[in-house]
Amino acid sequence: GINDENLFNQTITKQEEVIDVSKKASDFCKEHGFERKTGMYIALAIEEMANNIISYGFSDGKAHSIDIRIIADDEKAVLRIRDNCQNFDPVKYLELHQSDDPVAHIGIRMVMKLVKDAKYENSLGLNNLLLTL
Image (cartoon, rainbow, N blue to C red; front, top):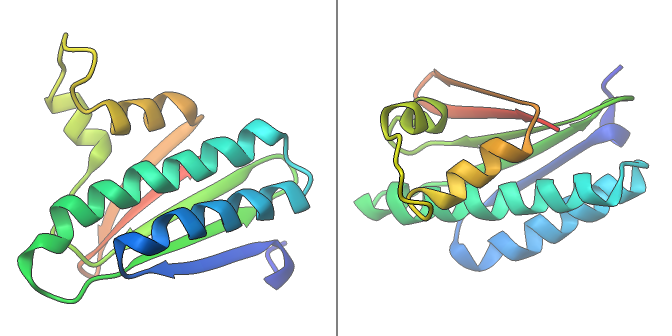
């Protein structure tokens, strides 16, 4: 079941916090017995997606935050990235922006290749991206 010990919660409100939160997330995965690469993938996903959200979503002059949650299950880690920026579905975005250019949307594309499953929903005006590793 889910309890406080297998939950990781951090909030990012500015660019400078991204690396610190991704490092803490990686450490959390290690402490919960996940393979080293799972922690690396989670850290990478946080960095890529948070930087993307900050670049595009924080530019409207309003106050924004990104909530990072990891649920450590027995077999898998689920990373939830939630933000209060404009609607943005990275899963759909990639489907709509197929490109032969290897560097186009490289961050989002790389993250989607690393995860077993990606789900997006917008609920109560919040973007929720669930990535299963």
